[in-house]
Length: 384
Image (cartoon, rainbow, N blue to C red):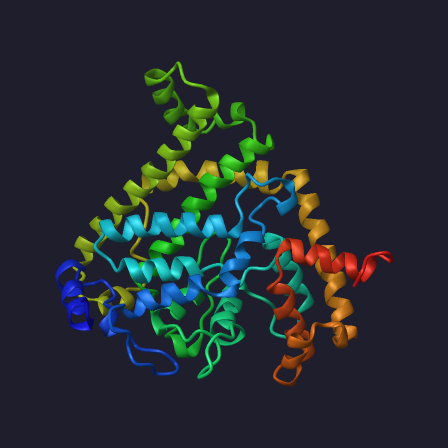
């Protein structure tokens, strides 16, 4: 049977010298005996998957509110896509796949219902109380709010996964610097992979959902160099296939093109820097996992297009504004009358201020649960 000695031997042989090895982990807040046949990061991954917060991602919005249709991505499907892309990159670069996967699976645990509009609403409502940042809330979830073990609060993840959660950054995510999690250091290469895998997943599945919803028109995409180049190649080779199939081929090719570029460019940077250890990577003054200049040039118009045509589409703006109003009203009712909170939530009133307890409760809601709570509190004929 595989044991910790063999796991160490495997990591020393197959992982790059600058990968994060599980046996070199800085440990857990509450020390635990290691598992007999799982590495520390495999154990973290499993704890994340079995958490209530992870399951709730199934009914949390990505761009489209859940009742818009069951085709569109949710936080859960997005998270799984990020993890799949990140694992592929980590394997190619001989980095720690288990750590990469754990950070990827945890990176959105603290997201609110109704996507980024929900986060904006809670951040505004929590002014003067520390605000709301979903990276920081993800850490709060795994450190405090998940109640699954009798010997400690939270799920007691390793230092490296917790660091990856708070230092996660992308176009939609702001890293948080916490004193106990080495704010002067760069995140691990594994976390840096998750950052870019998140952006790759966002761009490509939002394209897919945007086209399916008819908020994005394919004729507009043909003006983008990256799309038109791939479309021309597929049209030349497979002119007979349906437009729907061409869309899937283009999006798949977009992901492959970006992942391949990222791996090749990152390998060049690693060779140039002559990285020898995990510490070398963390001491560097900027991120090492990166696209080439050419790929950045190609991606820029696509990201601008999504911002203008999808995220700022009037229907998406209407959904977002409506969602903010729901959460604002729920927040005001609960703060004014904390006894309206469920009994298990009221228990936390002795540990935190009322607004933080209410914020935690709302942030943990799914879209559907938030809508049901709104009906119960504001519709006179709805049972409470």
